[in-house]
Length: 174
Length: 175
Image (cartoon, rainbow over all chains, first blue to last red; front, side, top):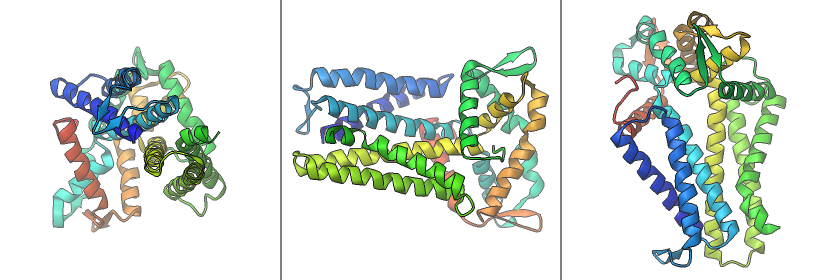
């Protein structure tokens, strides 16, 4: 019970900090800041729980006491963090498929003309902001007018290339 | 031994999930779509997790209430890891940023903006995604006009817009 309760407590504390920071100012690199908040919550909250485990008691539930309980708590917290961060990436940017569905729904019973979508959703909306994101995220840098991968970008590109090779995926995707 | 098995059971479940999903995709590809392989992998990983947890339930001296809570923690952890893995696959398949990274990776000396847009542009994105929507019967096309056929994606879109409003305070990244 203690791992479940205090694990959720740490997640809620991290979410509270996240919402508070976002209300004050939207960070420049949102994913990095989000990961920083969640990591700091675990890095500070975990040792506090460990040090004061004998004194901490909420709703009759004491803090975790053994190392294996803390290990489970860490895995629990990290998995929920990853799930939230991946979901957040869907909030951060507008998914073209969802925008398309919303536009078609807006047209209602008249339907949406095929050409309207391509007029509304052009390179300035769909591609160029994503290239800017890659530069902001330090995955890509500009060398003159040529975009090149940074070490971090190279690592991520290799990771996905290797995974697609493993899955024998030939389609380009995107 | 049992304590380590129990501690790492969500990771063990995820490992089974990934191995099964990759094997299904590589060797039974004709029968399974990518999405079905993800679901099947998840269910098989969950079976692995449940077997480990049942062994723990039988062996551990802890009270039943405590054991059930630990199992619940591991099931939630496994579900979150499985969800993360699904997103990882989805990123490789549909994310624009990953596709641009892959285009840059495949070019030896990098690409200019024009070079990127030649290989990957709005027209290609719209065409690929519209095909997906039409193939999944989310949208239908009649006389050159698109209509919503199945509201599932629309509901998802509305949920995401609501979440955007709550978290970011705006409906779109361009507001």
